[in-house]
Amino acid sequence: MKVLVINCGSSSLKYQIIEMDNKEVLCKGLVERIGIEGSQLTHKVPGKDNYVIKEEMKDHQKAVELVMSAITDPEHGVIKSVDEIDAIGHRVVHGGQKFAKSVLIDEEVKDALRRCTDLAPLHNPANILGIEACEKAMPGKPNCGTFDTAFGMGMEPKAYLYALPIEYYNDYEVRRYGFHGASHDYVSHRAIELGGLDPEKAKVIVCHLGNGASISASIGGKCVDTSMGLTPLEGLIMGTRSGNVDPGIMQYICNKEGLDINGILNVLNKKSGVLGMSGGISSDFRDIEKAAEEGNQDCVNALEAFRYRVAKYIGAYVAAMNGVDCICFTAGVGENDIATRKLICDEYLGYLGVKIDDERNNVRGKETLISTDDSKVKVYLLPTDEELKIAMDAVKILSELKK
Ligand code: AMP
Image (cartoon, rainbow, N blue to C red; front, top):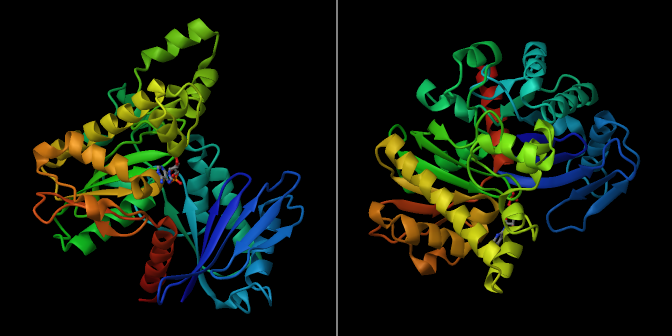
């Protein structure tokens, strides 16, 4: 069974074909600059040279058509015809309160997504364009949607309500949603599987530390809390995003710098995080670490603040769940940054009985138990795989349809 996974941005489209019988990625690719001069598609098949198509793509429809021609290309393709694809799985950023799990996409689902556009004005319109382009290009194929926000739907009101006038929730659905849902869902379930933990009761914390960063607490795979909120700005310190700040800062800086609300949000989203704290050196943690090693004190502070915030959330989530069985590190920093994993655990989590095995931790991007055998809490490095999660959900939806 083959699933085509599509992740559409406003001017980009990422895709993969996954053979679900053995979970092998047959090909993956990226379309860039859709609707902008200089569009191109880069198609990758493991073990082969990249195949690049440079052609104007005025819209997502054209992009999907070129994806179809790349995947069926006699020389570079991996299937003879799109008939071989059993389902298409789409990543959808915001499902509002309507979607707590992945669904088969029909007209009603698309209408619901359009109604959520206010909540994700940059992402949802692009996701809908991708879905409609696939519907047109491959009529009759089942299209399934996996929502970044679905995992957060597990939260109870005490975790998802802001202390704001309740009308804002009732009238405008202002609440905490959480993002990176496919990643938190995938990694927390994988931890339960690998660790042989109780599938109903296991208390798992997932630290998704990448350019965007978020952390979740779940019991038996059901979300108890997660650090992102109404938007992906809340929570941890990220590459360019501030995470939590005192909202009073906004008015103060607006007055000082002559900014309006859009201006300050632009600063919080794009000029803050480790980029802002380092005085503009980089949003990439590798550059920040290099500068810190060379003695840049702003970079030292940025890294310490980053780890401190992760540790504070872990502490809060241990309290929220009244315990923890397993802590997982994933995404770019979580999977590759040996020192950051070690320092978070050694500096702050000793009271939980967390012990890191330095030899086991000396690894990148590979599923590994990095805690010692006598650690009271299991600690894992678990590479995330959002595409596989999207494809697995599509397979599940199809099998339920057949029942
Ligand atoms: P992601 O958003 O998950 O792709 O993660 C991107 C982030 O991972 C970037 O800030 C990278 O600097 C960071 N990253 C990747 N490899 C390493 C590494 N070896 N050490 C530290 N950070 C890394």
